[in-house]
Image (tube, rainbow, N blue to C red; front, side, top):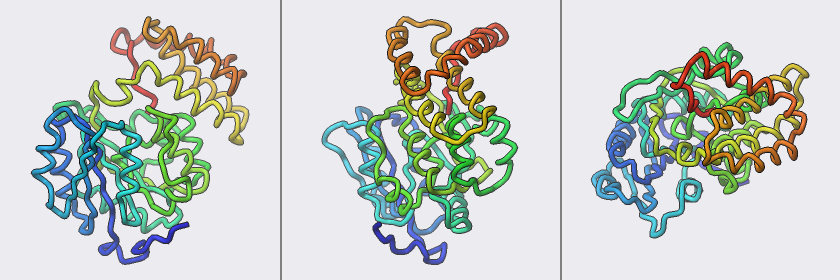
Length: 335
């Protein structure tokens, strides 16, 4: 394993690489950059990678070039988010890494607080914080914590260390780390789990990475909402909505079978996973119906017993629509 210098230096002397992944969303980019420039953490190794944006991202980023040492990388061919995230890993030189998505914002104390958590918990492979959810105008919609299952809310009402096996159970229910902008990653951990993000996922690449971390590392949690996670219709998850359930099933079903769960936990997980499928089946949409045979094949391949829980999940979905009406026709994603 590569030795990362500076990891054991005093907190004010430990560099953190911060890489902004830029592709369009230009109307949000200035706020993204301003909140990074305002970070109270002193030693930042700042980069921005533009993935051939068709908007004026490069013009905006050039206005920040050199500020706090920011270096700008312009790709000559659009590659998509995952290759850019892997390029972020290759560029970074510090023992800790933040991958900041270009449409999010953050509190000035984000990196300082997350690094304090990493210092306090040396067994943590990453630290993340609660996220405020904001709309396209920056208005507060709520926070991700209120969307979590009861067990997570009971466990994580304050700053804490989540042990790896416990984190894996939380992830089996939902992606409790809302997005990469809320995370500081320890490079020793990243190297130990493969050193790259998996190219066989589009929507769930971060979720799959967090599962890999939880296999051998703990996770530090900061309960304050220091990340501002933008909700808008042009995110990767929204654009790939027709494929998202395939990735849910591919990611969650085999892990549910492999993990040592009690009978009750296994039933809860299977119900949850079948509900995620039912939520995309009902109401039916022509653009997603053609994927149903693929999805059925994934269930039969990875956990055919989960089909026993499909009927209750369908009933739960129908009841939900009846109670909440059209505002819930297109449910929030599992994360």
